[in-house]
Length: 188
Image (tube, rainbow, N blue to C red; front, side, top):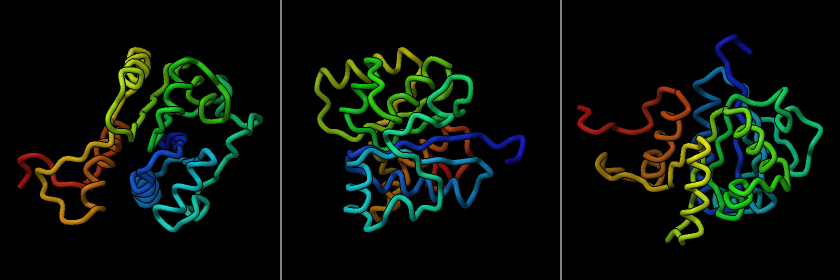
């Protein structure tokens, strides 16, 4: 790993929107030196396969078990630099917001928050209930960056992939990773 490379965990939950995770992982693999690991919930595996006809393991990254606790990311002394939860289910978001470390992903998020590392959450739900908004507020107040899976249209996306890329591009922006996945506002 190069000195500029970061350790990044990508969490995939059972919310619809696996295309966002796929695009993120593909871009990271092809364009960055970062060390990437994946943790997925059981429903995350299922929905990824259902929506993309791919297995998460096919992405070519180390995948940790959702119930594994003998790994670096669950300890503050050896945590990751960033955690991106994409897509984020409201159940997972609620558990993280209230400090319920019930699995590898929620424990990693707990560690990322307490160690003041970067946590990016891409909730994929509509409409938001007041409970959802309160949980997102709690996480934002604790430093999380909330990027709802709401695409933009000013770039005139012609495919579902281009539409999803308007969200994936913003996630990469907030990770500090330059990208050209979408046409920027007023860009010629």
